[in-house]
Structures are given as structure tokens and as C-alpha cells.
Image (cartoon, rainbow, N blue to C red; front, side, top):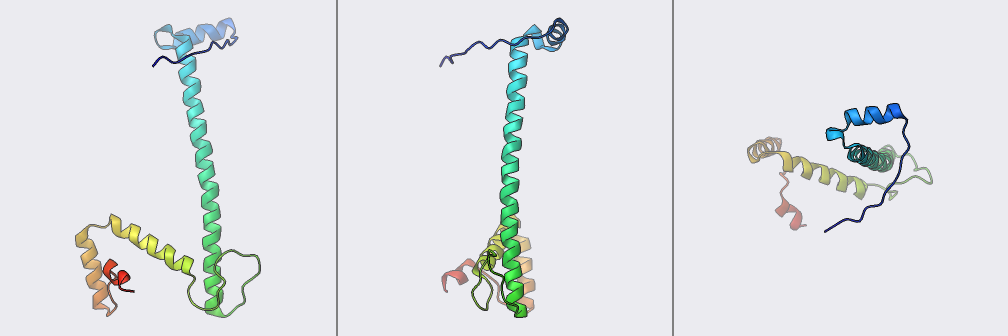
Length: 140
């Protein structure tokens, strides 16, 4: 497939042209400028994408913070403030928090070798608490 290209002219001083010819691989000034500009543009797009993700993470952190504050109020008996995000149902642990904890634990389990998981489960059993297994969840 042949890509259609369009000519774009840029003005440089004689000194700038000499420098570009010196640094451009094989004297290909046009290719050097194009590669440099597009590489920087790609970096800029990555930075914008990272910034968007940081904003999203900040919003997620606020929601988590609100959910945890809601849980603290439920445990301490303080009334919830109006306009906050998070679960506001009376009593109990918010479902969002339970889901978050389960998701975190499942991600941690996925990084853990089977032998280490078995050792951790043995420690849980030793305390007298039930060991969580997917089959237990399906039985609910």
C-alpha cells in the first residue's frame, strides 16, 4: 500500500540548516525532522493519556475515600453528609467496598504461586476461619 504524502515547508536559518545536516542520519534532514516531530508528538499523546488516567484515578480514589468514610460513619453511628458518593444504606458494609476487597484479593491471588496460596490457606484454617474458595461462592 502506497501512502499519499503532502509537502510541508519549514523555514530555517543557515545555521539551523547546517546543524540539521550534521545531526540528521545520512544527511536526510526531512526524515530526521519528520521522525523527531512524530516521536515527540507520540510522547505528548502518551503524556495526555497518562494525565487522563491520573484524573480518573483521582476520581476513583475520591469514591473509595467516600465509601470508607461512609463505612466509618456506619460503624461509629454518625449520620452521612448529603451529596457524598458511596453507599448510604443503613447498617452493614457497603457492597462497593465488599466488591473492591474481593477484586483486590483475587488480583493478589493471581500473582501468588499455588504453594504459597496453600500455605496461606493453612494459616487461615489454623485460626479457625473458613478458607475462601470459588466453589463456596457458587453455593451462596
